[in-house]
Length: 594
Ligand SMILES: *[C@@H]1O[C@H](CO)[C@@H](O)[C@H](O)[C@H]1NC(C)=O
Ligand SMILES: *[C@@H]1O[C@H](CO)[C@@H](O)[C@H](O)[C@H]1NC(C)=O
Ligand SMILES: *[C@@H]1O[C@H](CO)[C@@H](O)[C@H](O)[C@H]1NC(C)=O
Ligand SMILES: *[C@@H]1O[C@H](CO)[C@@H](O)[C@H](O)[C@H]1NC(C)=O
Ligand SMILES: *[C@@H]1O[C@H](CO)[C@@H](O)[C@H](O)[C@H]1NC(C)=O
Ligand SMILES: *[C@@H]1O[C@H](CO)[C@@H](O)[C@H](O)[C@H]1NC(C)=O
Ligand SMILES: *[C@@H]1O[C@H](CO)[C@@H](O)[C@H](O)[C@H]1NC(C)=O
Ligand SMILES: *[C@@H]1O[C@H](CO)[C@@H](O)[C@H](O)[C@H]1NC(C)=O
Ligand SMILES: *[C@@H]1O[C@H](CO)[C@@H](O)[C@H](O)[C@H]1NC(C)=O
Ligand SMILES: *[C@@H]1O[C@H](CO)[C@@H](O)[C@H](O)[C@H]1NC(C)=O
Ligand SMILES: *[C@@H]1O[C@H](CO)[C@@H](O)[C@H](O)[C@H]1NC(C)=O
Ligand SMILES: [Cu+2]
Image (cartoon, rainbow, N blue to C red; front, top):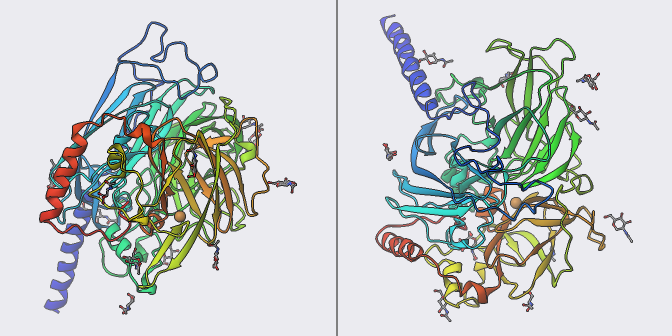
């Protein structure tokens, strides 16, 4: 009897301690998704220019969004990257990767044309890892070495080291940044990046970023180890939950191993009927496609990636990993609902592997009290036709018209998934999986006029040399969907389908442009981009695990001009530091490295 009582007391004691630990871990969550989160301004006001806007009299229609003004302003950020305990859904995950002790990482804000300068300090310990940050969608014209891809534009930032990125916010809209070192982003190493610019639509309030992401209870390193192992029963790694702005209570009755669970909350938003809100949707996940919707309301798409779109309505917005969509949302007063569900659903046979595919957040209408739980009904989910397709190209018309040039070369890439001779699964692009060499960044080699790599085909370089506009036909010869992302450019998307391309371009007078597009399982896409940015530019699938398995090529552009760049000394210093570190420590490169 005494034994039983002390057992009960002991269990109560433990649960209080564990509850406190969950709460402590939750202190790392950012204010995003809480009622404390501030709505965003139309622009940052500490440098108003005479005409009233930081970008002068440029508008969304009279100026190419890539012709940025020179504002002379630099926005400074100081990031320290560390491990930390994280339980955004209440399930106490052992270790995440945080920026300044925060998850998701701090939002970066700038006006169109400003420079963004971020000092990044690598404080990842227990165990140590290299790192680097990529600024998704930023063009890096004239600064390709600050693109943040280890083995391509830089050596990793060694443990204990710092590195300062400095680049222009030369396009405007909604984006994000994330680690490009192995799958660290899946450990939480990402945040929103917003560039204010002219608007072609009107709205009352900018709600700011809404990050949609799958969430894994296992450490990212563990998952990559499983995926890269030869044990096939470890290859499927379903996500455990789906977060909106880093929050979504886990169903704790699913916990079977005694892990502390609880004390998590939904993200909440306070809206008023009749007002129009701008929501900046970002799929910051590792693998799962997201279908975003708000019960009972249509949403008006106004931008896709960093490109303004002629507005059109949808009920469900499709976002592959890495993709963004800005939508306008006007709560209506139909019915009596005081609270509405916002939802993001990972769905579709090939588009996700999710144990809990639906993330939800609460919209409180017209002053409804905190804690109100909606009872609204979801839109019917998208029909699972197995394609994981984006919004139809036909519907997505860029607001600023850009004429498609004649391509100077048409190049075909075939994607295959294979099991190699040692029993590992890999993805190949034209026959080869990518494998990074952290110590020898391709851009720095090209700067030394070393731009043919016959000795190492796994660096997967396609040298487009002096071509002026490159058309690339991609055939996906496997059952995986692949959100294909290009660095340093946006791409015209000319075709997206289940059948081989017959040469017909969708909206040939003004094709859709974006930086990430979903390639369908067993499907085709055709993209084209202009040689306006000499460099070595990654083109890859944004699904973390596919990238780990090598689904990646480097597009080399104007190598002669790369050799003319005066690359800052800090790039060589960072490699010297990494060489020093890697010659005295074991660097466990368990995947492609990016
Ligand atoms: C929340 O945390 C407190 C300790 O701060 C604990 O007593 C309580 O049981 C926790 N609730 C849940 C649902 O885990
Ligand atoms: C560095 O990481 C350690 C361990 O995670 C942490 O205790 C410490 O606060 C971090 N330092 C900074 C400056 O963030
Ligand atoms: C493969 O993984 C499964 C699941 O963890 C495990 O039960 C099995 O022992 C492993 N097989 C080998 C050969 O390691
Ligand atoms: C939570 O999981 C349990 C066990 O599978 C299930 O019975 C229950 O319906 C789930 N609750 C919710 C709200 O999904
Ligand atoms: C709300 O009312 C408007 C105008 O009557 C209608 O167009 C819209 O479809 C309604 N929405 C819902 C969710 O019923
Ligand atoms: C699009 O949705 C908005 C907001 O719900 C609505 O006001 C507008 O009438 C819709 N437009 C069309 C063409 O359906
Ligand atoms: C198979 O792939 C793994 C993982 O990328 C790699 O380490 C291994 O060397 C490859 N084996 C062969 C024979 O290429
Ligand atoms: C190019 O760089 C690679 C990797 O450092 C090196 O092995 C090769 O010798 C270099 N080629 C030339 C021509 O310098
Ligand atoms: C264009 O790219 C192709 C494919 O890499 C290459 O063979 C060709 O030489 C390039 N043409 C020019 C003008 O650089
Ligand atoms: C497509 O995949 C099949 C096997 O799934 C393979 O036999 C065929 O060679 C592949 N085609 C190309 C062009 O790689
Ligand atoms: C080519 O494909 C498009 C769809 O992408 C179709 O509408 C058109 O009819 C096809 N043209 C021919 C000649 O097959
Ligand atoms: Cu993929």
